[in-house]
Length: 464
Image (cartoon, rainbow, N blue to C red; front, side, top):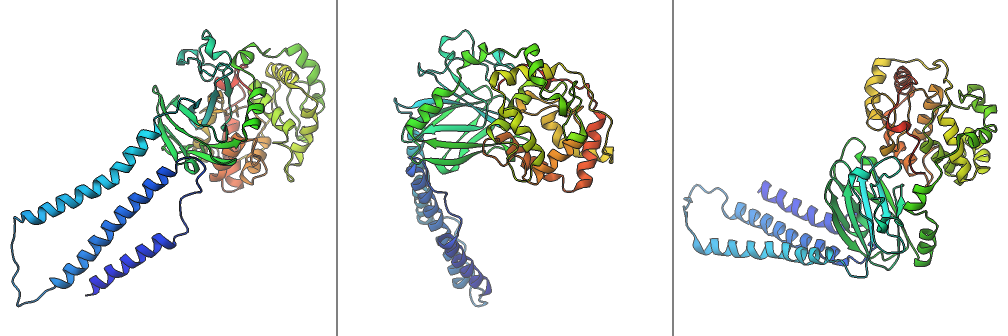
């Protein structure tokens, strides 16, 4: 009797939890209400079976509870019962599968008027490519991939010349218009999951997968990687911004095409030398930095990273947080630079050979080495940095500055701005450094990596 009562209570609690649970489907932001209906059908079918099985168990416990006067029967063949079980199971499985198959067929049947957007996943971020005025995406191949062409667009394909490459994890879409996402991966299996849009699909290396949907509401949502793709999996997120059609068209028209990016002047060091004259008071004539002015060493810094940070300062994505007093000092200088001046000064700084000076932070280097394993997945085992992972070089950087930025990310002073998506990733990545001892240990180990580390992060080419 006690077991029967426990099963009844379990059944009642499960049913009440389903109806009263605060955890429901996220608000729908696309045309895929059919997927919600399919999920509801699955819940009801599974719920009906669950209730029936539990009630049958309760009935069996009560009906066939122990009685010393009753003898057990043995019925190895009961064709009537088998027929009922087979029939009911068939109906249940069909009820589960049929709606899903119908919706899936629609999910991968792309309307003719849908516009295409390419999605590329890599550890641990998303990139996007839009067709230009011709409405076609150019051909891509891994042999064309490089610092200045991260998505491997074929430079000889006319259809790719007007493609628009977005090298940040922000997908912008027009409201009310169908869109086809064509996806591939540069390394391992990822999964592009947009919960508010009821859409997700595996993103595979060497293959193309796709689905379509129509954004129904203007707003901002998040896409995540739903495949365990490595140590930074949890930080592999993307922002989905659905705009009015006119606003989307205006934004797209402002973006440089692939041909324009390829034709950009990589930066004139001599012109950058004149621009850098404004920086010497703090960063030094050789980019060696100065702790007294809170200016880190920047000699040899990767041009792509320096350009990005200058642009973030200029746009207010860095240096505007209330507690970022030292970042605030940089913003006025960045405001004075246009895009070409940023490229020029980055080219000049990359050629400087100033030293970051002696270490100012000490800690347990062996313990720091173990802690650094997490950092090394992006920044490289030798702190050389990786352009493809948007991770700058750490070796040779002023240790006090590295420690300060770790604290800034950990405390949310840096990386919270919506226009700083890679800073947002860092907030999650540094949370394992719990206290000052952890910070000092890992920075002490970074000091041992030296200033001579080189690698993909030190290249002078690349996007903004």
